[in-house]
Length: 260
View 1 (spheres, rainbow, N blue to C red):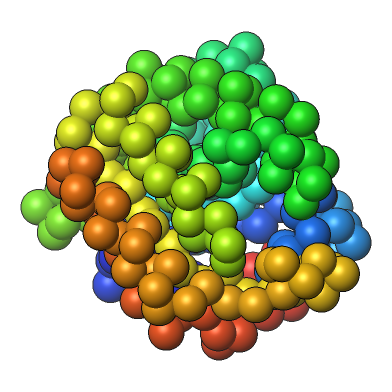
View 2: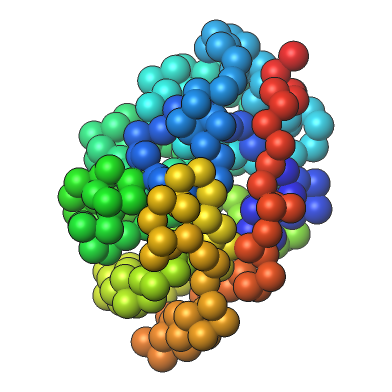
């Protein structure tokens, strides 16, 4: 998978494993076939460990666990098993941040890179579009726990991330003020070395057409306003996605590749 942040995808790609099901119900989900319709294949812990080892053998820079939250107990067992069998590359926990701190504590020492997507500041938006009450409160507590475990980003000699916290945020149409509040929280609660990946790829997928206010891509003005604010408040380490990336070309094709 080559469409992650450059220091995660690198030159050889990120060993991405998408998990079916999700604890959020985002009406605009671009991966809805697996998150909401549960498309996928059942694997045992042993088979999942083998998938990780195969990705390492293929040269992937890391193992990238996408929406792992509801499968965390099995994933933990699979990581432990794979490590006993020679898994050495970093493990990325790629999450919507709606996590329980106790669950994250269970993973301490097994996850090298936390990649949470901090989606909403405003609770009304989180409830309306993702059915996630108290999202910001849960997500920020979870992110502080992730930081406690892995700290600021550390890179290898090729510039590939080997450990640390990177926070993603997807700019939503009409909600730039929400984006600003999230960026301000990051600025006030985490060290300046933390990387923030500001994403502009929002595309109205799945059921977004039922909500006229979010049934569009973000405008160049919204994009500029979010980025200007990022620099205004003194955030230093950012990955800013070009606005052109709001296209279907970046949505993976779910064909169970690598699970045979």
